[in-house]
Image (cartoon, rainbow, N blue to C red):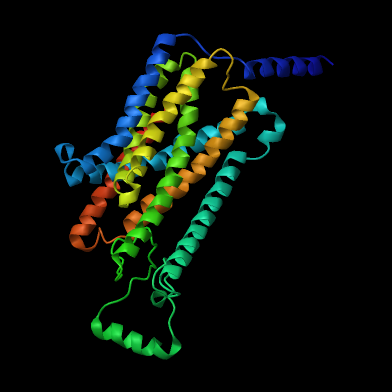
Length: 360
């Protein structure tokens, strides 16, 4: 009987702790974080775009090269260290009860999200294929590459093989993705631009969607944190700056058509504003909001899991596999050295972002 009563008391005490508000003052510093994070986030996202458009601040090509692959590492580390692990902690928290702790929901949601993003990209490929096919008057054009690269007519198989042997060359075994084929050969330049735009636009929007989800909860956490605020403040500033540079470099590298020149600025400023707005909202509810409240844990955990799935897909497929395997940037001996440098830079970006996970 005594053990039952003790368990009830312990559960009630734990429930009180789960809903406890952790705000610990320092209102002036928290208000300043709105503006500091706004400047850091916006600068990180906007500066690469400015540098790519205006000659008076244009940076050398190697600066963009470093920022591009450093940002790739940052985004991949963000998915694992700053999203998936906190999501698992939130959805596995004892405050949620036994029903949430019997299954790794965070990893399950991340897995489902990854497959949904892949399916959405498949549908997008199909849509663009159909759209371009109708423009070409029924002529089939596959964004997955020329089917002759992997489908052979039996009658011509032997002659094709003899031609390859006699020429001493071989075809690229990888069908090229329409968003990543830098050397796509086509007679219609405008169609090439359209393909490239649709593909990269999809990748950029998916990336931004995942990052903004994450940034909103980062802002809420900073505004309502307890004594950890002193540590979180500088860490989150650097976090948003690095993440903004990664996103901004990708936006700047996208070949935007003349009629879409406003789009990169909109995407950059949307990223720059999301965390400061979340901090301001958090300050407004600072005395009532609790990260350990049951609802907050569930919402935060679910959205972090979704963001992790988005950034994992984007980071591993779009930023790693296609950047290194499906481009002509790293061909030849000089290209191999360039590839090793790019890989090392990406590792540094991932390592620094993973290190920030020690504090936030």
